[in-house]
Length: 375
Image (tube, rainbow, N blue to C red; front, top):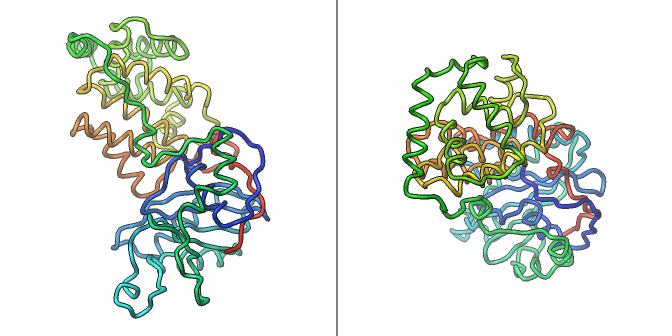
């Protein structure tokens, strides 16, 4: 689930263009080649979900079950709105057999069937292309004409959300932090030598939280979270710890929960933690990571991008998380953890914390909109 919701003042949608303006503002970026959904609670919106359009080899029923799983995370849902963002053209429309045929209809019908099986109605749907938009389930003469995209841009909700501080980017990559390098020519050597020095004292086992290096690393990171970076060596030390896998994993987990018991620690790392993440610490850790990035050469940034991606994954912002993991892989083609996380996101896997209103990142709580528009 992807949300970008600075406040909780209620909005009112009176047209389809209003709802179409809501989606990119809620996500923080313009969806492309995606299904997007908004859950409804009566006449008020709930959560916003975006899933990339699956590969042709993915059975429609399997895709629909994944979508339903995430939609049901909103325990109060009684209806759903669907948005299909694509420039693809249905085969029947391309051949002229049915000019009004919609792309990915098999997936849409499978989703509708899954929702009906649990007593939830798919109340409406829209097709959105680069050239304009139209109702997805249109059958009446003339209703399949493209409406101009300007109607979305000029809608009342778009104007209101911009006024309230929402920021929409064309690409999730533009929502990632990648500050210009301000360090010295010695920064790479400093990081490498620090890591080598630490490893000289032995690599701690994954669960050896009493190992001297593990204790020192956690203490240093705990001290710096919420603070500032004033020296390059300080930033390089913090970055250097992340090149040691057991220490990296422990520091990442600490951002969600500092619990040392094995079960909780492993649940946190794998996204199976059902407790309340320390979201204030998550935000402070993200701020610190960006400060460290500025002193870190490009070739050493993969662990930092990976850490930021993992935290965004925990927030439920899968598209931004994927962009960070892509940056990590670009910095280090062999960064296996980023490749693993990228694969999990591609399969639609989200941490349990992001699927529960009680534990989800506060900005994932839906911006309420009343009166979803009819076509």
